[in-house]
Length: 264
Image 1 (tube, rainbow, N blue to C red):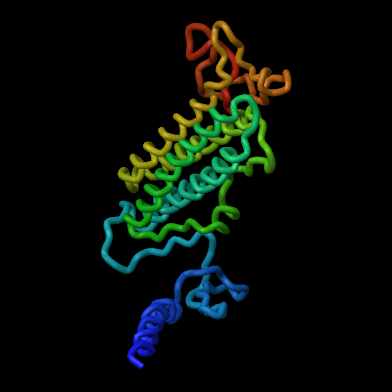
Image 2 (cartoon, helix red, strand yellow):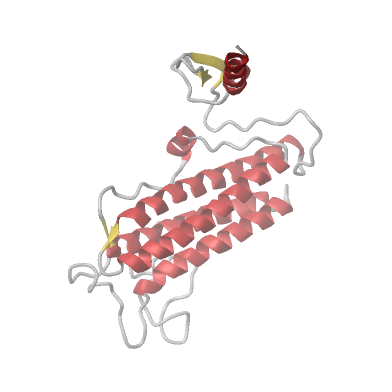
């Protein structure tokens, strides 16, 4: 009898946390009615709050140190941070896709480099999300928010040629860097601390862009068009310099061509 009682007590102890979690409403996927749900041990969906819009940035009801400029300054800062967070999360996904599927002569080099980039971008995304919380807003990292609001394109599916990966990331990092730089400007007045943080993120993205651009950087002794990686054809990158930047060539910032900047 005592042995049976001990078995019942142990079984109850292990079952109680799961029952308590269900009663409290753990986070799970949204159901069709537009409400987030918890899942009971039997698989029954139990709604506990509305899903909300994409993105959703809720303001705390407790004291916090927020941006200057009242409601307008707060909105401008949270929008810049949320926009940057979404871009970074999209970049994370595309980096992993590239890391797994890159193929060709530079497979291993790019495989390792893209993993390093993924880890760096993950840290930046975490810093940006936590800055949102620090200024009194929730952060939105949901998959639907990324899909509906990110302006960063999808990298193609399937195996990816190394030259294709290089060209894609030269352009993608340029686009992301430009977007974050605009957010730096937007937050400079209402929240200099956020602006400084975004400058740090932009600096990291610019560094990553350089690291992939270097694969096809023209030098005095090698055009580095990428033809040897790309079926005897130059990689698909523009040779012109964007407006507002110094011309490439001897005596300036380079030896001509292959800037890696996408046409805007």
